[in-house]
Length: 335
Image (cartoon, rainbow, N blue to C red):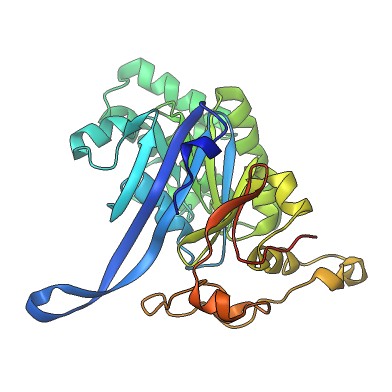
């Protein structure tokens, strides 16, 4: 499902992913060879421009977090290319990858388990600076305090442990750690899903402010449509390890093409149910099918109310149906 270079209408991308796959073996056959695989990421393509936020949204289990971990090579890709600043980093050595990670950092979903409970805040934020030998002594100390103030933490918190903070404060610590090396790309892996709604808004606004201040580029991963809509410039919708729809935020919500995207948007609660356009509402029923036993055809076929024999037998191409709007569907719809 490769998007050709001709369709990428920019030469300013910071990251480009081509045919990225990540398969996990689930059973073995004769002589211990892998027999069946869970196709967590199955041949996806996208690019991220410098200074923009690409949102990746989908149900739990669709492969979005695996995508983020594979880009950073916390998981090794099964196939495909990861091109960062014009360099294919897919197969470079771990030593070379360590240098690349100075420019690609991650903010994790759980702001508690991602922080070492035995380390004080000062040492948590200082760890990447010490690992990459960026600063020491007074310079290190000043950098830590500056980072804390940048993310809205008082410098007096530096000697405290993670358990002494709220979820929102812990996430601010994680963001400060991600900023420490002045990265060009930050992968935000569901950074607000574990937080209260009011705190979610604070963290989203903080990320937006930091992006403007430091000219950051984000990949923002989430399963909730509202957060992705609020922060993203473009949105990629993932289903069963594949990107099924990708476009700008405005285009996606004004001309929704894939039935799955339509269902995700319809599932968002509204204050007044009478305001919902029920004619275009689509309810996604059943759970995700078994990803180790996928048949031919469209991966969404078993849950799609519009599916027919063609959908069952023929896999749809990921193609451009409107300018900059890509969808993998034989019969794309539109609001």
